[in-house]
Image (cartoon, rainbow, N blue to C red):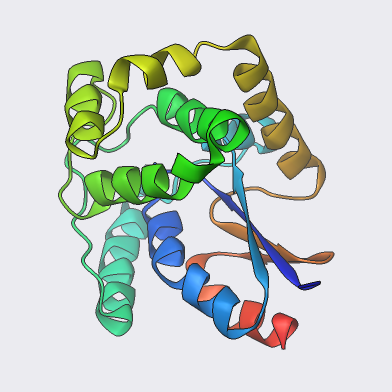
Length: 196
């Protein structure tokens, strides 16, 4: 399988969630490998001078309506998280750590966290809530929280975030097919074409 689509994402992004609901199937249908690239969106924003669309009230209102339209089109649940914005540093380190140390559990973790953020919205920035969500999904919450403190895990997340910025990423989700960059869950048709 030589075709790949890289998926730079952050759990705090509802549009990353929407892309996640579609990308695995899209990649499978194209005979492509989906390469998961957890990054820290706050770090990307800081490095690029970008900010969340909700910082512009009119844009935030429009985006809420537009994301609801896309969720209906994709046939997926989407509930705006009342705790938004949530600091995702621990969540993204968790993804990075599992990808590095326990890759067999990575996709289940991604599924668990995205659903807890955007389907049954929980305050995933609260350590106690996060531990409950992880335990319900069969994770050892203590072991996972220890993993996020691993210096190598921290360094990998920083490196991936810096790589994303160096490649032109300014927000999430961002997908790459080769050198072609696609920003936003509403660009998945172009990703499909690029993989075709």
